[in-house]
Image 1 (spheres, helix red, strand yellow):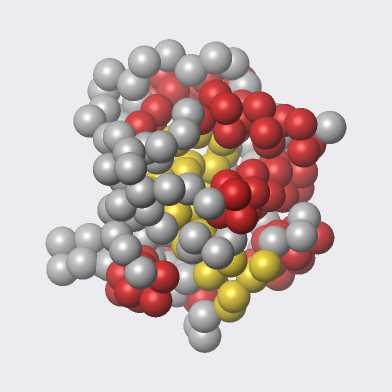
Image 2 (cartoon, rainbow, N blue to C red):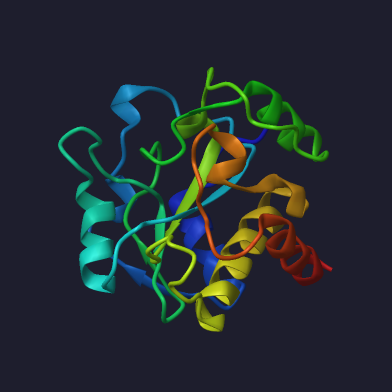
Length: 196
């Protein structure tokens, strides 16, 4: 079991990994902790936003929607590879997912199919939203892919996790397709290489 790292440790871990960080005012206290606990944490979930335009995307992830208040993640990875910190603590990003997947993440084993939504993922995962339309055509610039790799590796280093602790939203919650445009197996390979 891993308690979430402090906001300062999180920030330092990202910077130590070479991540270009943009801190939004108030990100350290912007969370949904009043809705339930955050932790123990077991992994990282990668998403795409289905939006276009960095400024608009970051604002949406800070504010959220009427039906899903922000923050919608901990960091927004824009196409230029910058990571905009929009919240710290419980965030509305993972939603309900599969308890079998959570057990596999904890054990760092191959993921089973996600066929039920019975477990609170917002409690157990760090989350990063990546600016992309999610249509399979919108490109993923290398700077952005490298930032996904770096933030994932940074968190894994602090917690002593392997790349198997990093999953896509589509591997957690039935019906989700994100991130679309690369495979999580491929991204985990990159993360594993970086951790070595």
